[in-house]
Picture 1 (tube, rainbow, N blue to C red):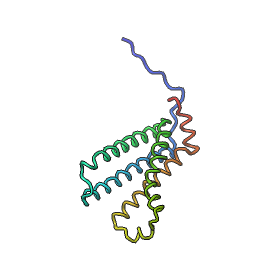
Picture 2 (picture 1 turned 30 degrees about the horizontal axis):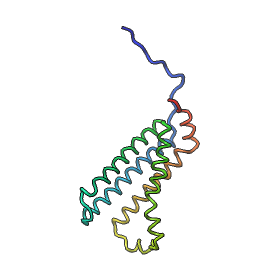
Picture 3 (picture 1 turned 90 degrees about the vertical axis):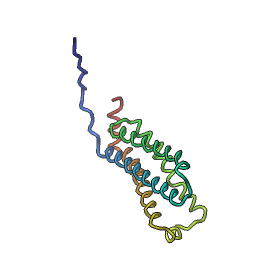
Picture 4 (picture 1 turned 180 degrees about the vertical axis):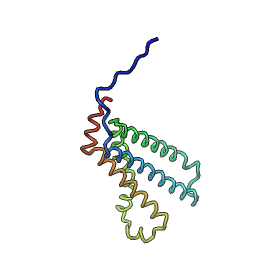
Length: 161
Protein backbone atom coordinates (compact mmCIF):
# COMPACT_ATOMS: atom_id res chain seq x y z
CA UNK A 1 0.00 0.00 0.00
CA UNK A 2 1.40 3.37 -0.99
CA UNK A 3 0.81 6.69 0.67
CA UNK A 4 0.39 9.74 -1.49
CA UNK A 5 0.84 13.27 -0.30
CA UNK A 6 -0.60 16.37 -1.84
CA UNK A 7 2.05 18.66 -3.29
CA UNK A 8 2.99 21.60 -1.15
CA UNK A 9 1.80 24.96 -2.43
CA UNK A 10 4.47 27.14 -3.99
CA UNK A 11 3.52 30.02 -1.71
CA UNK A 12 1.65 30.51 1.50
CA UNK A 13 -2.03 31.41 1.13
CA UNK A 14 -2.52 35.16 1.35
CA UNK A 15 -3.38 36.61 4.72
CA UNK A 16 -6.93 37.87 4.86
CA UNK A 17 -6.75 41.67 5.04
CA UNK A 18 -8.56 43.54 7.76
CA UNK A 19 -10.88 45.19 5.24
CA UNK A 20 -12.21 41.80 4.12
CA UNK A 21 -12.56 40.55 7.70
CA UNK A 22 -14.42 43.73 8.62
CA UNK A 23 -16.63 43.54 5.52
CA UNK A 24 -17.62 39.97 6.44
CA UNK A 25 -18.34 41.06 10.03
CA UNK A 26 -20.48 43.92 8.71
CA UNK A 27 -22.50 41.48 6.57
CA UNK A 28 -23.10 39.42 9.73
CA UNK A 29 -24.19 42.64 11.46
CA UNK A 30 -26.58 43.44 8.61
CA UNK A 31 -28.10 39.95 8.82
CA UNK A 32 -28.51 40.31 12.59
CA UNK A 33 -30.18 43.69 12.18
CA UNK A 34 -32.45 42.30 9.47
CA UNK A 35 -33.44 39.38 11.67
CA UNK A 36 -34.10 41.75 14.56
CA UNK A 37 -36.29 43.96 12.34
CA UNK A 38 -38.19 40.92 11.10
CA UNK A 39 -38.72 39.78 14.67
CA UNK A 40 -40.06 43.19 15.66
CA UNK A 41 -42.41 43.27 12.67
CA UNK A 42 -43.70 39.74 13.33
CA UNK A 43 -44.21 40.44 17.03
CA UNK A 44 -46.08 43.65 16.21
CA UNK A 45 -48.38 41.98 13.68
CA UNK A 46 -49.10 39.06 15.98
CA UNK A 47 -49.71 41.38 18.94
CA UNK A 48 -52.15 43.64 17.11
CA UNK A 49 -53.88 40.74 15.38
CA UNK A 50 -53.19 41.98 11.85
CA UNK A 51 -51.63 38.64 10.90
CA UNK A 52 -51.47 35.07 12.11
CA UNK A 53 -48.46 32.77 12.21
CA UNK A 54 -49.86 30.99 9.15
CA UNK A 55 -50.12 34.32 7.31
CA UNK A 56 -46.52 35.19 8.13
CA UNK A 57 -44.96 31.76 7.54
CA UNK A 58 -44.19 32.15 3.81
CA UNK A 59 -42.52 35.53 4.21
CA UNK A 60 -40.58 34.38 7.26
CA UNK A 61 -39.44 31.29 5.38
CA UNK A 62 -38.19 33.50 2.56
CA UNK A 63 -36.41 35.83 5.01
CA UNK A 64 -34.74 32.93 6.82
CA UNK A 65 -33.51 31.61 3.49
CA UNK A 66 -32.10 35.03 2.56
CA UNK A 67 -30.41 35.30 5.97
CA UNK A 68 -28.86 31.83 5.63
CA UNK A 69 -27.59 32.53 2.11
CA UNK A 70 -26.18 35.90 3.23
CA UNK A 71 -24.30 34.25 6.10
CA UNK A 72 -22.95 31.59 3.73
CA UNK A 73 -21.79 34.24 1.27
CA UNK A 74 -20.14 36.30 4.03
CA UNK A 75 -18.20 33.23 5.17
CA UNK A 76 -17.15 32.63 1.55
CA UNK A 77 -16.11 36.28 1.28
CA UNK A 78 -13.92 35.87 4.35
CA UNK A 79 -12.33 32.79 2.75
CA UNK A 80 -11.39 34.69 -0.38
CA UNK A 81 -13.98 33.32 -2.79
CA UNK A 82 -14.38 36.21 -5.18
CA UNK A 83 -17.77 35.11 -6.51
CA UNK A 84 -19.26 35.80 -3.08
CA UNK A 85 -18.33 39.46 -3.15
CA UNK A 86 -20.04 39.89 -6.53
CA UNK A 87 -23.09 37.95 -5.31
CA UNK A 88 -23.28 39.97 -2.08
CA UNK A 89 -22.92 43.23 -4.01
CA UNK A 90 -25.67 42.39 -6.49
CA UNK A 91 -28.14 40.54 -4.27
CA UNK A 92 -27.83 42.44 -1.02
CA UNK A 93 -25.76 45.51 -1.77
CA UNK A 94 -28.04 46.67 -4.57
CA UNK A 95 -31.38 44.88 -4.33
CA UNK A 96 -31.26 44.53 -0.55
CA UNK A 97 -30.49 48.21 -0.11
CA UNK A 98 -33.33 49.14 -2.43
CA UNK A 99 -35.69 47.02 -0.34
CA UNK A 100 -34.57 48.89 2.78
CA UNK A 101 -35.05 52.39 1.40
CA UNK A 102 -37.88 52.18 -1.15
CA UNK A 103 -40.74 52.15 1.36
CA UNK A 104 -39.51 55.15 3.39
CA UNK A 105 -38.74 57.10 0.21
CA UNK A 106 -42.18 56.34 -1.22
CA UNK A 107 -43.75 57.33 2.10
CA UNK A 108 -41.98 60.71 1.93
CA UNK A 109 -42.89 61.16 -1.74
CA UNK A 110 -46.54 60.61 -0.79
CA UNK A 111 -46.34 63.86 1.16
CA UNK A 112 -45.85 62.54 4.67
CA UNK A 113 -43.84 64.56 7.17
CA UNK A 114 -40.73 63.14 8.81
CA UNK A 115 -41.17 65.60 11.67
CA UNK A 116 -44.72 64.42 12.29
CA UNK A 117 -43.63 60.78 12.11
CA UNK A 118 -41.00 61.44 14.78
CA UNK A 119 -43.52 63.29 16.94
CA UNK A 120 -46.02 60.40 16.65
CA UNK A 121 -43.45 57.61 17.11
CA UNK A 122 -43.50 55.26 20.06
CA UNK A 123 -40.52 53.44 21.59
CA UNK A 124 -40.93 50.45 19.24
CA UNK A 125 -40.78 52.74 16.22
CA UNK A 126 -37.52 54.26 17.45
CA UNK A 127 -36.04 50.80 18.12
CA UNK A 128 -37.03 49.64 14.63
CA UNK A 129 -35.62 52.82 13.03
CA UNK A 130 -32.35 52.45 14.93
CA UNK A 131 -32.06 48.86 13.77
CA UNK A 132 -32.79 49.88 10.17
CA UNK A 133 -30.07 52.56 10.36
CA UNK A 134 -27.55 50.02 11.70
CA UNK A 135 -28.64 47.57 8.97
CA UNK A 136 -28.21 50.10 6.17
CA UNK A 137 -24.91 51.46 7.53
CA UNK A 138 -23.51 47.92 7.80
CA UNK A 139 -24.43 47.13 4.19
CA UNK A 140 -22.98 50.36 2.81
CA UNK A 141 -19.75 50.03 4.81
CA UNK A 142 -19.35 46.37 3.83
CA UNK A 143 -19.80 47.30 0.17
CA UNK A 144 -17.11 49.98 0.40
CA UNK A 145 -14.67 47.72 2.23
CA UNK A 146 -15.04 44.66 0.04
CA UNK A 147 -14.25 46.68 -3.09
CA UNK A 148 -11.43 48.79 -1.63
CA UNK A 149 -7.83 48.56 -2.90
CA UNK A 150 -6.68 46.08 -0.22
CA UNK A 151 -9.66 43.80 -0.80
CA UNK A 152 -9.20 43.99 -4.58
CA UNK A 153 -5.55 42.96 -4.25
CA UNK A 154 -6.54 40.10 -1.93
CA UNK A 155 -9.17 38.75 -4.31
CA UNK A 156 -6.79 39.00 -7.27
CA UNK A 157 -4.31 36.94 -5.27
CA UNK A 158 -6.85 34.28 -4.30
CA UNK A 159 -8.30 33.84 -7.80
CA UNK A 160 -8.12 30.21 -8.83
CA UNK A 161 -7.54 28.84 -5.34
